[in-house]
Image (cartoon, rainbow, N blue to C red; front, side, top):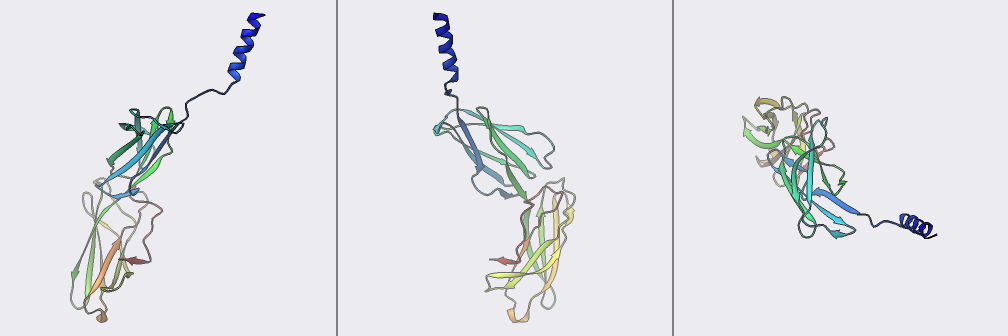
Length: 220
């Protein structure tokens, strides 16, 4: 009888809810998810258990780079602070998917976008003609940017500028592309103007946010 009673007690214990760990792990960007080539992405996260912070724990940061064919692989480990939080900074050459792993929990991945680093300048030509040059810095392995850049021009005192030209970037060196457009400044502007240029995502480049678009009007 005592053996039966013990077995029934054990069975009842197995049916009771367990006090299993309920670890929660987060990962997101501290700033923008998109940065210019050569700049670092900044991410932060937190590890808790039933709402309580888990300090001094190792968190694995895993990544896979465009075109995302490979499996996620660890690129760094970080340790949680007394409040369970952690930070992570890294520079990437191409768009990269990132996730965090700790205490048997894996976060959904977040996408870190890397845009070409742009620089624009203008050269005054004869009459009222103006040549705008956009230079883009990219990883050395990039061979081609398929999408044309957009150029904008507006009067100096305006808060917006309209699209005035497009030009496809041409490779002029390792990791250097150049797009140029010649436009005319209206006489009524008296030689005072704003100008800007916008990079468009090129399919197959792994640079920039595929969902991003250049605006119809540039706002200063």
